Length: 530
Image 1: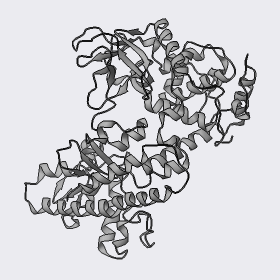
Image 2 (image 1 turned 90 degrees about the vertical axis):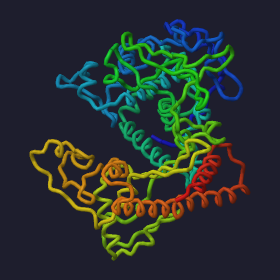
Image 3 (image 1 turned 90 degrees about the horizontal axis):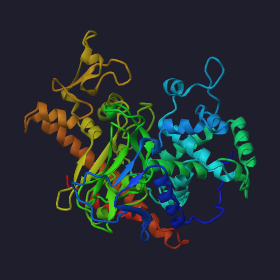
Image 4 (image 1 turned 30 degrees about the horizontal axis):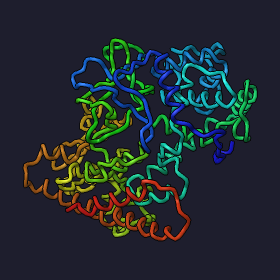
């Protein structure tokens, strides 16, 4: 299947008509909207707006979505029982081959949940594939069709992994560039793996062509294209929530990824948000609750997460909130590139584009040997450096567990043998052992055990302020962090700015948030003092 095929829409996306249908659908499916309505407003798409004043202590939720109108694994399997094609699509492994049990038949829903490693997200993906294909074949409509039709098109969501190649490259040097590339590669891998099954592709083509009113304008209309895959990923990534599949008072242990119609219309406001979503464990319903007084005509908003940076918001939701642009909660989390070559001690380190502090390290010296050993000891834990300013008046700070570990002077480090009968060591106490089910020697600093998951924090509990061991570790970490920020991250952002200036002479490109992100992160790094 050609992953680059683009499906052209057969008719324009009419938001007002879709929203009117959604409101009718919500009423038919028992979704309560109390003193609010769904409507489009300005250029910001659609949202929920108060039709009367709502008090902060109102005992009536703004929106109540009953459990059977929440899209969960169980509601999806219930729908599949009404369609042989959907059931066949759902009961397949990640490589597209059918799932069967010992009897040779399809498993029951409970058998499926217990024995087969498809996640809640995988099942949501299959649901949306079915809805897209059923729309192309001209029906039949099901109870979820009107809601699916109200969801925004790909271009409106604007998530970076859906951008074209040149726009993705314009993120070079930013905190999310590598993450976007990795996400895109993963999506391509999952897409190609599912549809490598010729039998599945033929089933899909037959299903669309056999519809009552098939809408086939292109060859791609009888298959699932990579553009479809990106659309589905955008819907799930930007609109899904953790929900219950059945009533449960102990619901924190029973949460699954799902989607909540109408509540998913709530837009983000990082400063003035006025509501939040809650779960009713007794009924499994999803509630939208006011957190302050909401005036008539005011938009009902939630927060998608406080203190998130511009990069994280752009990566996850496709936009940078206005508050971040004007100084609220600036955060950037950069992936740390390889500092030394961990695979072969004898090979010369290859220099990375955008700066590489390893080029200043002699391959033959003791420092390199120590750094390589520390890389291995740190294992698969995240190697990140975060720079943040949570308030416009606050100083810019940095934090990196990996850098803090690399900064520990080797002369203070030692190892302790793990006792075989020590259950705490076997279970990975101090965040060092049991990461992959294997026991390892415990790493000590100046004779003290510490948490590899929080190096700075755990050492602060052990060493008094001003101790030589603590000062040495902090000084080394600060020096390494400064080398990364000034020699790698700033250099990458400056290189991106030069590329942008060169692009100005070329053809005009769609307006994205990429240049805004680059400038915000350059400003943030420039304000960081070591």
